Structures are given as structure tokens and as C-alpha cells.
Image (cartoon, rainbow, N blue to C red; front, side, top):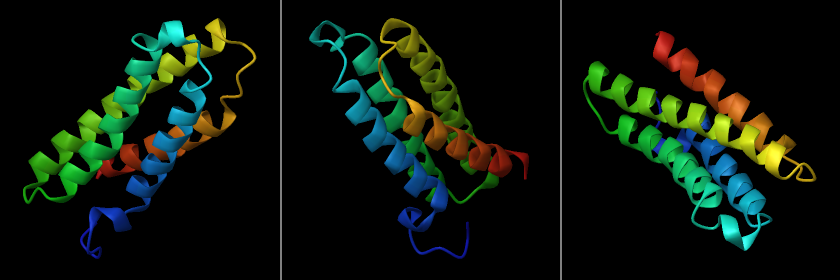
Amino acid sequence: MSNTKSFKDLIVWQKSRDLAVAIYKLTEQFPKSELYGLTNQMRRAVISISSNIAESYHRFHKKEKQRFLSIAFGSGSELESQIEIAKVLFPNLNCLEAESLLTEVMKILNNFLQK
């Protein structure tokens, strides 16, 4: 991570941004009755991923960086669970793009956390 000038240069942040866009587009298709339920929870979780990655970039101590990356990873796990629930509730939705991006983000985060 040290060869970058900004958190925006991190592939994992870029993928998490793309994931956020995919989740927002996906949740726009949910019924309005879910606005304060699953829609809100999924949007909060996905924003937490990119936000914590960005915050980790600006931390100087390894333990602090790891803590924020760990929070991002946890938010990714929440989002994975929420996507699974959405697939059951709304079986006609196409969740493939969101699932694929989430898998990529989680793999990268896991690699960072293992270092």
C-alpha cells in the first residue's frame, strides 16, 4: 500500500467503490417497503467497506491499519449475508455483479489481513 499517493489508487478501494455502485443499483429495484430495512442495511454495509479501507490508508501504525481493514472485512461479511437474504426475498434480482465484486474485495482484504 505504500507506493500509492491516495487511497483512491488502491485496487481494493476501487473495487469497493464499484461494489457500492452495484449495491445501490441493486437496491433501487427493491420494493419501497424495504427502504428502511434491507435497502438501508445493505447500503450502510457497502459504504462501510470503502470508508474503512480509505481510513486504514491514512493510519500510520500497522495495528490501526489492520483494525480498519478488519472492520471493512466484517462489513463485507454483513453484506454477503444481506445479499443472500435479498436473493431469497427477491428471486428475480440479478445479484451476480454485486456477488462477484464482493468476492474480489473480500479476497484482497483477506490478503491484507494475512500480512
